[in-house]
Length: 376
View 1 (spheres, rainbow, N blue to C red):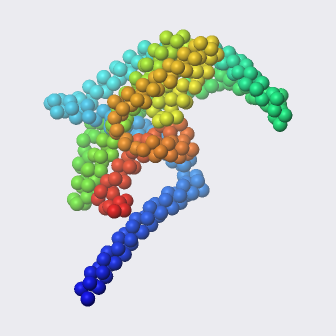
View 2: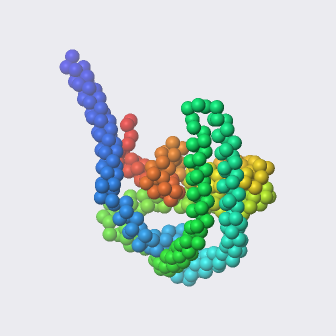
């Protein structure tokens, strides 16, 4: 009888321990959520975001240099394995990179400049077409007594006129600001490339940095850094190739359908394609609007070409190029886009997926080591 009671007590004790373990996991997750919320409030009240943006702006050449060195390091390692000194390998990679950039600038920038001028000329036609389309659309609501259609038309059209006037009057200032920003950005890029070259030469000194950690932590840290590096590198390389293909295919498709400034709109589609789900709509909308301002036929064919390209990209290119490097659920990606887009706009949306992917890698690593997320 006593043996049975002892067995029963042990079973109950194990159940209580298991329940306590699960409650501890739930408590840790709640504390994590509360911590994130508290950090958000601190950022808002102490204006930390503005401070961080200022720091990032000052240190932007360093970040550019680090990213360049990180991206080119595998090439330098490959050359080093072939018997080429790391410094000479970095120099070769840099010379090839600069030659490619110079070639792209010589071939594409003059065409882009010309097409930008063509696009500016189409802005009045786009606004007129938008006014006509809005006027035709509002006619369907003319019979609704609760809506003052004339007032709505007056407000909308006055806003369109203000936009047109603002574009015309502000264009010289915008051009000057753009030129200033371009030269400032070019200077930052040059400094970043110089920093990147020196970082690239010594980028294999990770082991020296790890030696400062306790010996029992070195292997785990090395494994974690390798996992994050693989996740981010796979995403970045795949995204660059994917966006480049979208740029080329979109430009060719827009040129075939007769859209004005096809290279400009193709470049915009390629750049915005890095944003999951929302990117294709952001990039394709201006092309469709300009297409319809030219003619309904060009507008329809532009829309069809964008839909077809995105269908091929979503079902074939993305699966082949990006494979499953991020391995993130679509809902996770969308939530990340909403959060990062709210705080940091388009730039935040562009970097949300790789950052979430890196955080997921970190959490999975910690879960594997310390069993902090499992409930079984």
